[in-house]
Length: 169
Image 1 (tube, rainbow, N blue to C red):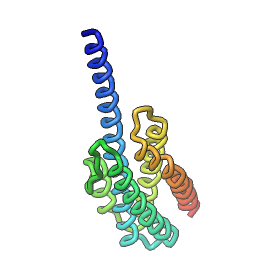
Image 2 (tube, rainbow, N blue to C red; image 1 turned 180 degrees about the vertical axis):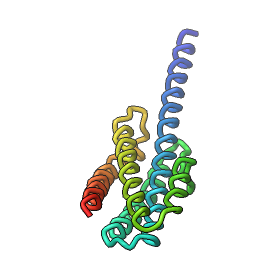
Image 3 (tube, rainbow, N blue to C red; image 1 turned 135 degrees about the vertical axis):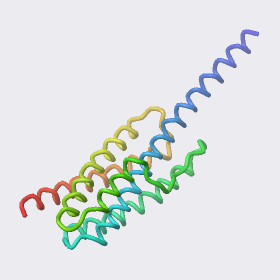
Image 4 (spheres, rainbow, N blue to C red; image 1 turned 90 degrees about the vertical axis):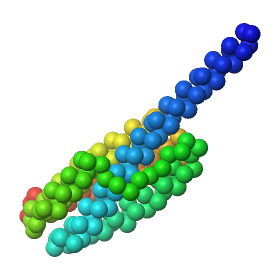
């Protein structure tokens, strides 16, 4: 009887750990996907609207890198046994940001795009740093986060440089 109780206790702890891992991974995948989708959508809009060559080059770079990141995240999430997946939508916050960006034109658009890119990359770097350190992380998704973090940090550096350049103009 005592062995049976110990076995149930171990199973309950394992189930709790699996649930914590699934919860953390689902939250990370959801937030990373929304962030990634915003980077792509806002950069596609920048290619349509901006006449600034530096912004257009940055936007092209964002689209290319974030499409790859989206594919890598989808693959990593699919490699988990947790049943998490990516989604193709924006959350309310990012949809509102897209609406605000869509309403802007000319220099206002350029300024707003760069401002939003700075904020988005700050948030993304924080999100990925936290998940890399997460104890209840899914190994494939954590590996994706670890490999993608340097790319996001480089984007953050590039957009801050673009922001400083625009402030001088």
